[in-house]
Image (tube, rainbow, N blue to C red):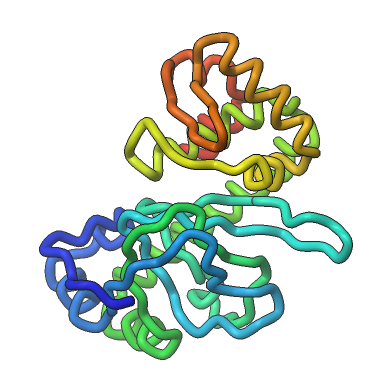
Length: 228
């Protein structure tokens, strides 16, 4: 669903551009509203659009046959979805689905390629972001292998908190299990431990961050490394 373009572009990547560059992107893009659970890409399928979140949060998920999907990265207004288009690769490597509903700017694959030619600073900015995203994915893979569930849950909650810009958000048990790559019973245990420590409140999928600093202390070092 298209919505009115905001007066101020709130995507952090686009804010790095000059006012002229931002105006060009604003004129060429559509501002749309994304609904929770909407799937934007499927692995192996063609990428038709690049998305620059404003208030929405999009998750990138690795999928394997006979296994539940595993969340590898969250993208909010600090980044973009469809970064492989910067390399000229129009095929999705992971599933991209809407984690939290909200607005974003959308450009077609053709529009993005043309914009990177017309606005050289855009290509430079997106190249830097692509490098950062690769590093974050590597960090996530290591985190899943080496760190315990409680630490990883604290990390994902902090990453979500950074992107939704509010203390309260919704997570189903299934969603948390996908984030962590564990059974739902593992989610219950880890969330219960964080709640017992007074760091969060968690009831029927509704999560409230109570003690942000305490949550950072419990989280593994991967959170600070991926936030750099």
